[in-house]
Image (cartoon, rainbow, N blue to C red; front, side, top):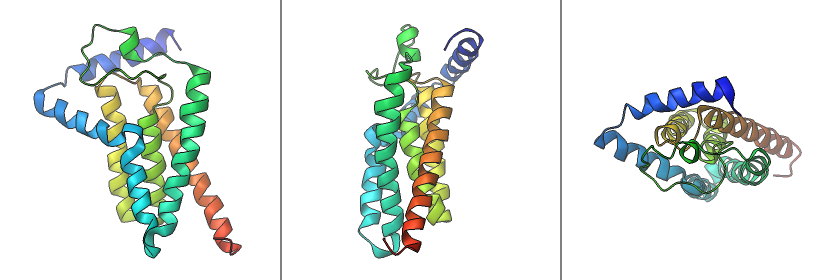
Length: 179
């Protein structure tokens, strides 16, 4: 991906660099930490799985995360092989360690939206909080200069589609009496 789109995306990332300050830097580092390897969402899904009232949403979260990891992180990232902005522009000081995998799609955003949409489809009130966190995590990846906007957008769209697909499959199985 290059040319005009690349210029626009770098322009957005450079503008975000103007927002940096000690408080916001620490906040964005914390927000992105919540998305590291999907740990927060794996724990949330596992906890939900433990209670009858939230078991189905916990299952949806965990299945969505597994599908997204296989599809997004293992397959698409390695097919597209897009360099990260921090690799292409090493003059920008990073607040976090430079990731060593490819950029497209954003895995943090992918996992965040898989979990958020899964929760939203079963529990709207909790879903709004999860969606807000997913948006913040996606934004943090651009703020921290490790993803392009299109990486984040692709992660959000793919994560939402995976979660919706898992929801449909689980609900069909429920109607058939399988789950």
